[in-house]
Image (cartoon, rainbow, N blue to C red; front, top):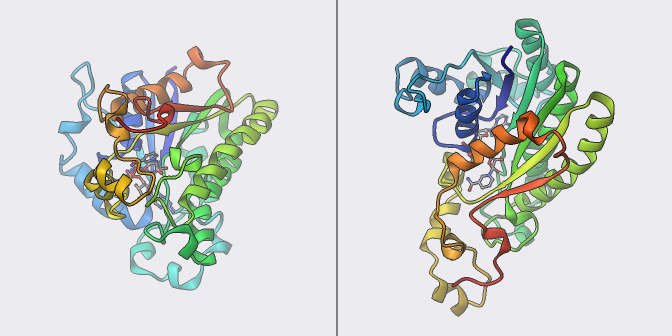
Length: 300
Ligand code: NAI
């Protein structure tokens, strides 16, 4: 039988999660999606009304099918963790069973097992603030939504991931190099995610024969990135400007490798590779899919 994938963090057809879903679907996988509760309505409506049909087209001309969309909020592990104001919020009240534990239970009930778990979500409420101006609350929120959310997903899904299965998350070079503008503790959250990739690869590998890898992706004008103004900031920054201000700028990285600026499809394809038996000896790795951005010392 074909493989079954659960992809957490798709709410439109622009982000890395969507690209990964397409590559996995093209390789024959069945696709289940976890969508952030506040974004669920619009995502399902758009899907139903055919708004994504053009971007659902696979290389063989067929349309990607999504077997089921689950509401998910990955900052809550079980119902006891949900505060009253969220419970009664009208964007949440219309959905149920969206904590990590409950979603894993629902997937188990509906499908039994999965083979591939993808974490393509992040959130940092203070991302536009420099780290030096970030509050404790904002920092911890970034870690909770962007790093622990992976630990929690893996923890709750592991019992239903078939041995030989694989998990993939998305990270960013700001974890290891200075990227001004990627603030609010987001750089710290990605560093945690990458470190956890190693420890979890060991634990999940020993315990369940499940591999754990992360893809360090180049910049993409996704909804999340646009919302924080991060991509605009990068695009508007010229090299002269950056040097003039004496800051290290990441912008020119777009041009560095002289390959291309976009790597969305390649992120999807790399995820499909990492999830496949072709990568059966790859675990605990941070795999760069960024046109070489990570290797640059200075922009040219
Ligand atoms: P995106 O907006 O397509 O994906 C982020 C998703 O996370 C959204 O669908 C959002 O609804 C969801 N989300 C936020 N909080 C959530 C929560 N508490 N529970 C469940 N879902 C939640 O944007 P993008 O950029 O494709 O992000 C996907 C991953 O790729 C993220 O981990 C991001 O940090 C990473 N990445 C993005 C880069 C970029 O330049 N866009 C570069 C490198 C990595």
